[in-house]
Image 1 (cartoon, rainbow over the protein chains, first blue to last red):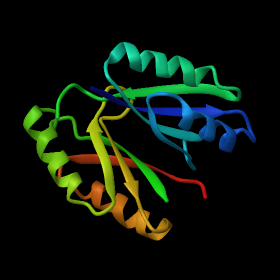
Image 2 (spheres, each protein chain N blue to C red):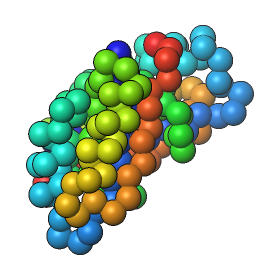
Image 3 (tube, helix red, strand yellow):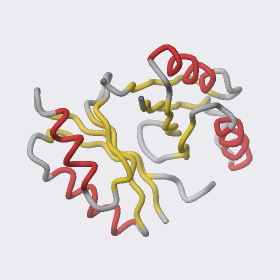
Length: 77
Length: 79
């Protein structure tokens, strides 16, 4: 199983809508609007890296998303 | 409310043993729902749940106090 933290910057006014849509993307455990360097943070859990890439693509396709940055978990615990 | 703490480690604290000890320490902090080492701009991410901004500040401060941590950047949930 692969975890990742995906950080999004969105167009002004789109924060809440993007967070709500992101939370419904398969593989996203939860997502929330944040203050700080990014606008939305998503906690992601997928069965492997291929599935993680699909989540990244799905999130980038959401209306209002401008930039994404993915922090994939190291394969150690 | 949720919060996300993005952690940077001192450069000498990169071995697997340190990573494991750091995460053992993180998991003892109240409100931590998930934490793991990551690739990218930061070294670790810590997801938190807190009652309010004051509690979140307290909890993220405890992450910063773990020996070996260089800096933290906290993204609080916008309520």
